Image (cartoon, rainbow, N blue to C red; front, side, top):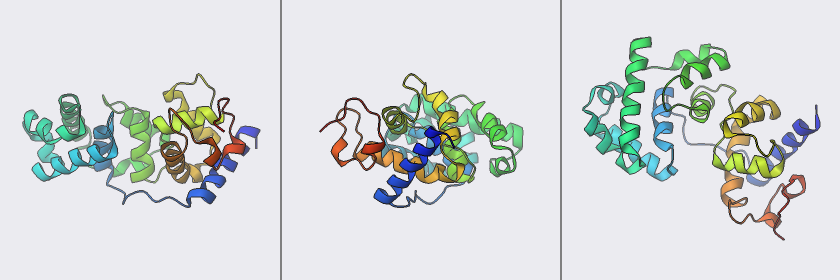
Length: 221
């Protein structure tokens, strides 16, 4: 085990000690998670859920969302922000899946190698590596490591990734650093660390459970 992998595992264990074994909300079917994650882009979890729930209330099936008037979808998801972009994007993804698969079900992805499943998802406009990894990890229990803003920031400060690495490059890099069996918990606990301790503007370094494992040069005292 190289030094970086060893430190990643140490960080994972320290966060487990500090935060416990995290449990996300009940897993959604993969198609639901895909739509939810598209809605989550450039907004917070509360607004994402408001948009998702409003969409399901107005159009209870994904077939209904797919076939609806575009304005109806846009108006329903407005709480999630960027509705004029996300509405047509969601409908186009649903139409393309139907054309390729014959139904709106993504469970078949669980039978593919993870890289093949990832490539299948990311071919859609608006589905990047983070969205694909969330669907694979949380809905299909596949070894993928989603990298959001918090994880990107924390992994840079701690030295888990090169400073100038892009977000896109961070996905395969962190997958190579953390053991696959840790992806779920490490992802959620790193997000919690970023939200509660390692903030963007003023990290609370003295309160940080991984302070001694961190390479951040501007630690607060």
